[in-house]
View (cartoon, rainbow, N blue to C red):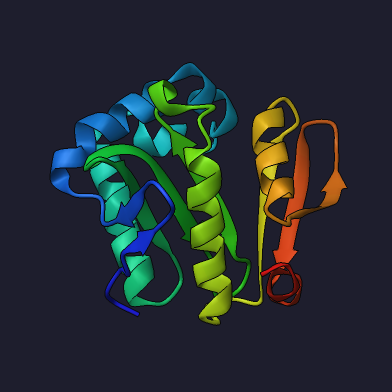
Length: 170
């Protein structure tokens, strides 16, 4: 898998993130909620060069069939990203949206279509993620598309969806 497929949700297009998108990615990563809930990424993306390196890493992951990152576009404008890592051994989804576009259902559409893609095309048998307990909106979003809570600790909720369950939901 070296070509990133273009995906479509009811209102958005998911495609490659380009150099021209770096300023919007910077805004997404600089957002207070993104910083709080994706704090593990912050050391990697605190500069535009760091974002370029992250995108380059995802290009390498894609060449190795280990991951991918989509830019989410509404009317041609980048509003979010959805990424998958470790597809071959521990498939994990991460995502973030520009604050202007939150709470409008865009992310739900895009997470659902991207999860459906990686499961339906056999890139992995399941997808997992860990969400900070305070990020109730993300936990609800994932549960609404079929993720189950696989565990919980003081800081995070661990969620997972299996290909078999996804097939039954379709």
